[in-house]
Image (tube, rainbow, N blue to C red; front, side, top):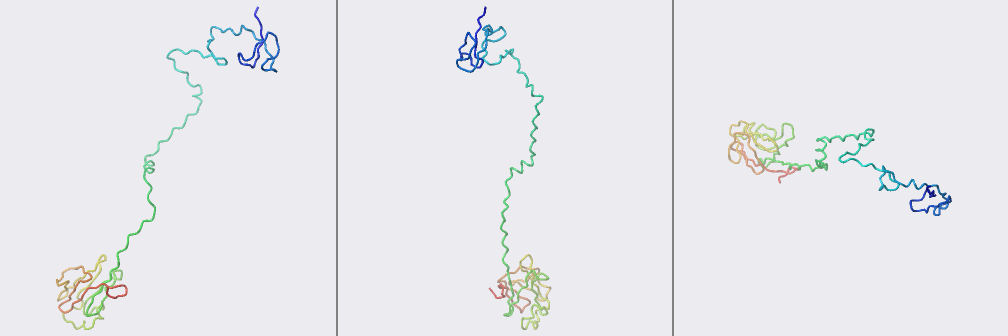
Amino acid sequence: MATVIYRCPVGAPGECPPSATRGYCQVHMFQQLERHDPAEDVPSADTPTDTPDGAAPVAASPVGARPAADPEAATRPARPARAAQPQQNRHRQQQPQQDRRPQPRPARPPVVRLALLVAGVLLPVHAEHRRGGGGLAIGRDEPDCAAVPGLAGLDQLSRHHARMRWIDGALYVEDLRSTNGTFVDGRRIEEPTRIGPGCRLRFALDLDVQVVEIDEFGAPR
């Protein structure tokens, strides 16, 4: 006949001493002991003896067998695939940002004001932005030379002898098919010739002039 003992139902194995009579646990004083059959402690043939207390027995898997598939994999929602970043956007991100600071404007070239010194009289060359491109006309009947005394009596000078005009910010002198010609620094010209401060001009045989630079008030520099 098997011996019946009483154990604490809440204590860990070996923690609470068993008793041969029903009563209360000596460790858990308010916990009543429960009946326990020692035959239940004998392990069966299908149950491994080295299984830790409280752990579920694990069946041995055959050699080479693959682990079972996750049963929740079929019901788990798939992760959305990450969209490939366009090459164009990647290129923009790699490019350094442009400098948006205001850039200094190129300095404007200084304004050059020229005049002809004719018989002690300054004849300013009109600015390029004026109607007709500015410049200056030389001749006995030209209004630009009306301030020069005695010019109308010079027979060698044609009525419309020469003209000075601006081309891309530079001053050129052009002979208007005069009878006695136009000279720049002693050389007769046949086509428009560039002139500047210090150049000496001669119209016909009796009118020598000099190119000078003037300030904004019309005085020679």
